[in-house]
Length: 239
Image (tube, rainbow, N blue to C red; front, side, top):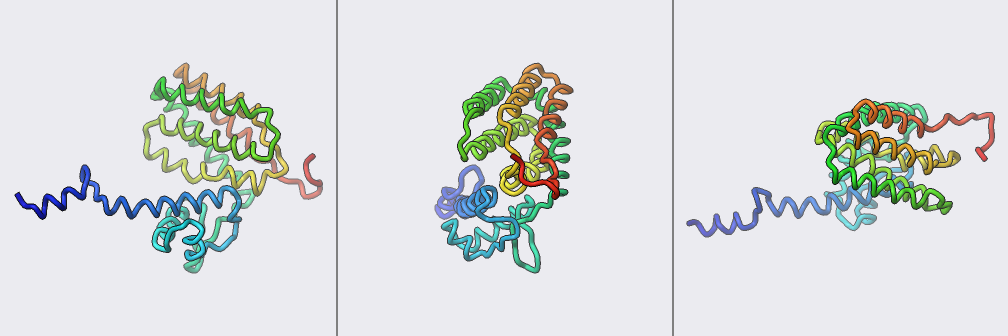
């Protein structure tokens, strides 16, 4: 036996280089920190994303920040211009297109998930529906972010239930938008938690019935019903 080789193999687990894994941890920390700052509106559309500032903000270094920014650019949350990176600015027209794309992709995903979703996954969806029901009458300023977090988990679970890596890649950029949407475009349009969660129950019923056509129609209608209305420049703020 070769002791040197044994020592080398001891630093690996199931073929995974532990050193590489350790390097990925700061990247994930930087990625999640920057992404959440964008989604919460702390980093606003058009803001410059300098590596040094982001490294300080996320408690990492410039190397993981650089990789995190590449991932965010691939998602569409960051834009590269002349070697500089900025938070992407979504025009109202682009927001509308993103909703249409998401409706098509997720309706298709729901039709597939109806045939593949497990009882355990249906149970987790019901748990999310119940959690959203608890905040249906909440009027605090934090309710939108709490609801959108639960809503993201609900939609993500259905995508996962398709068992399709390709669908996950296709839906990821559009699914990244909702919090930006609420902060930037729908500040004057109340999030209707009751209506949205009623639609969640319909989607859950369709999935439970293994009815692909019903699941697709329910999902498409759900997403399109939340599509923001265009602002009328001749009218004041919504009341």
